[in-house]
Length: 171
Length: 439
Image 1 (cartoon, one colour):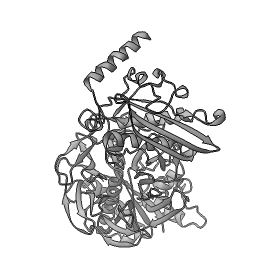
Image 2 (spheres, chains in turn brown, purple):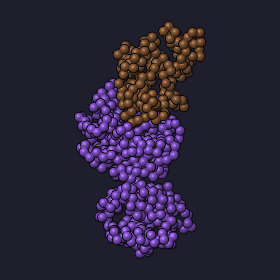
Image 3 (cartoon, one colour):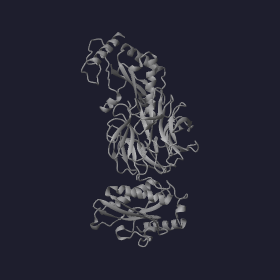
Image 4 (tube, chains in turn orange, purple):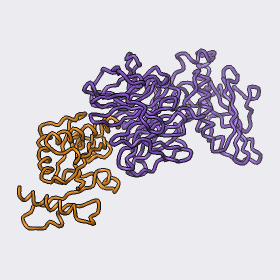
């Protein structure tokens, strides 16, 4: 736990360094102290990545994705467990702000999926608020089925795409 | 060759015996319907009357565009041009000079003839429609305009031919807006004719763009774009190219649809609990909230008289189609079959609402009467079929389907009998929106 906290502290430091580009790569390259866990963190949202010609990011950062059933924005026990961990990080890093992206799989209607993605992001935010995270630290946006993580047409892929994704915005 | 001619002759005689007088009244009956594709028509390319012969292939191009429209209508069978005996340059275009036997022998029941003259870049084109068995002219039209308008002249005459045979103007002099990533990874809005002609990319947002819809003036398009990060509503004037951001409320500004009189816009926006429908004026200011519900409310579609709005809501636990007054107030649930009904599209005739329904894992297009009766399934066993949008005459629907792999646009008649692919090539084509008739 201490190791993780160390990484997060290094990350927080990196994020406040003056002159950092708005799109910050994770602490892997700089936090080189022996024994530390390293994990890449990407602060670019899915739209920014898409515009730059990159694929959306999976949950590589300190905040993990949560997943949903088809046409659902209910948080199951697994999703709640992930969000409790995410809440812990948000509590340990009280100055960090995040954006919560709501995504859907490709099936169904574009407009309905955009509204469904908004509901997913909103459900995640509401749960985190119930865990004591200040609402003004979290924004939400829906990308519906527009920015899939995985582009195959099968259930495995669809399940990965039905998600709420966290982007650490910094302070 | 001789055997083929004899075959045609036998066929023509047989048809003549069966259908001794295909007057308009009978034509409107059961013999003549979309999807039957059985009414034989010949389109003779208009004769070139231009001194010096400039504009050589305009007549052939007019005939090709007209033939394509007639096939898309689902009513007609085209008599191949290579079989024509009478050639435009050596024949007349009125009942006295046309050798109707030369068309009867090919089995033609209807015939288009015409002539054009090109003066600079001004095209004058006259087209006439004849009833071959009765040897009489059914209609004639003269068009004059820039030679760039050749396609529209053909579309207008196709509309006129449908008017003559069915009593209702055809849908061809119109435009279809749609979303495509055919030119790269970005989804942009494109506009084209029903036959795929006059294709034009109208947005260059290099972002996500969704849900195009037409203003009643056919000149302005609404769509939602993430070009500035948030999904905002934009209005694009296609003539001037000017784009205006109309609504940039935090969160969704989605699926704007002009009221039939063009004075207001129904739009999906987020509020604290869910997405709701609001009514905006043309400047984007709130006129009133239409729904205020914890559930998802999306995809408004106006009744042609502007008094009601069909929309999709999951307030019952699954997405279903509802109808409400455009003044707001209580909504009435319309669909009860299945657990996924979305994308309502109210026919301009008012008599049916098309929508998408998920059934056994696939998505298909259905229609239902506004009183909830007479559910009809129009597509089946052919991939996922979505995004229905009605033609201006209410007889056809354009929709997207992945039945051949990538998502492409298709057109079908309101019974789903005739289904024709409209777009080809790379990328996904989705979210078609059919304009009203051009004027």
